[in-house]
Length: 426
Ligand code: MEV
Image: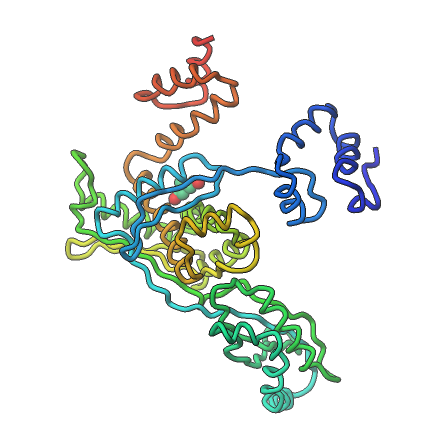
């Protein structure tokens, strides 16, 4: 059966759904009902979401949770998180509270430089293209005057343009490597507009512009977040674990992620659980953040941990350094009502403040994962949180859920054990 269509984008939303359900689904009315049950009843709000992308036929919800009790550089935060994975928000909340009684999180912005490149081919001599570039460099910057005027008023703009030869890697390949300060905006549109203006001014016979585009790899748009405490303060309550043994084991877990890429990817995935959740909640671009973070993790030639740990002179220190290109103005940040709300919850941060908060969310998540992995194991907490998903899948009533949760308070949660217990309730 051929399932193709021309002019799909021109159809109304109802018509698109009609075609889809006929072409791909067996139960037409159920499919339509499901799609429509996720439409927002507020038509204006729905239209806003429809217009974010093309061919919108419904919405796809993710839970919006909050993790309270984070102290970052002495300021109290409750962090908004958008994520579907059980236990991420719970872990963040526990860790926020844990460090709130141990001095909180301390952060530093190490840079805010963004990057864009005009990639071009030139078959002539390197000295000739250098002479041409040096002669035209101020014109290149001038060609962006109209685009950069507002940004310059806000203290941003183009920082520099460099000519870089890449001919040792690819014959005739050069680039204009442009650095930017984009203040509180992520700056993708601004950077791309500048680059296209620069490329248009730069182009001449003998130069073939291949493309002009920002780089999502921004190793100098970098933030550091850290926690530290006395080793004996690492252990809570009446635990019998020796704090130094635990601290060293924790440090070893980080060391393993530094030398073993298979572990490092999972280790960093856990960090991104925290980071992506806040990036999404604040309407930022999680694909850009992900791509950049992983490129940064491999900057020394092999894929390593984004966090580091030190245990020295009775002190435990744990930190993250991560590049984060974020915006708190422009893009979805003002347009998506929930993104706007998230930013208000975070006390309307600047982009630098948001970098700090998001780095902390990543560090906290990694702390929670390593603490669990090096002590009880991850499944205990994870399956407790997953219990509700299993019960929802089974269609349990509120009363059945309450009884099951109570029953599993002191018993390990497994799929089969939940299924068995659930049967006894029916
Ligand atoms: C699960 O989403 C994340 C962890 O696997 C991270 C880790 O292993 O460090 C728990």
